[in-house]
Image 1 (tube, one colour):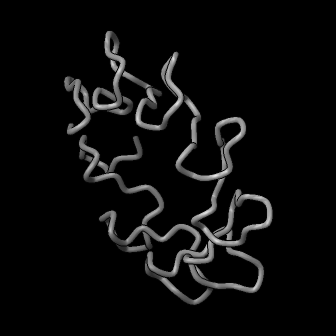
Image 2 (cartoon, one colour; image 1 turned 120 degrees about the vertical axis):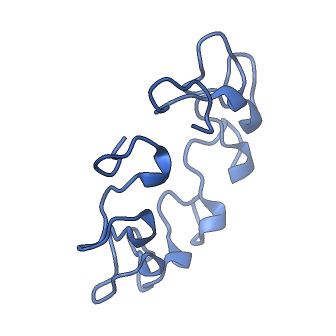
Length: 124
């Protein structure tokens, strides 16, 4: 998905590159004003802050730092470790997340979304 022209592997993914660049290292979506490198990406910052460490989208109530991000938590839990979106049936922990598994498989190691044509494992 979103590969550089003429390439078919994930390493050459090139969506939203800086003008005049063709490699992933120069991806520059949502940069701070006046900056052109990835380190200064600043979307969804906390009010009054301008660097990525203070990103604060979907924080737990009463918290203002990234460590307490709490989108899609298990019912009755309030910390990130218990995030539980897209769990395998019968499981309640993040290790068994199983979205987009290969047919016939039920563990995360066999996740296979957006594979290169002709390949069936995540490495490709």
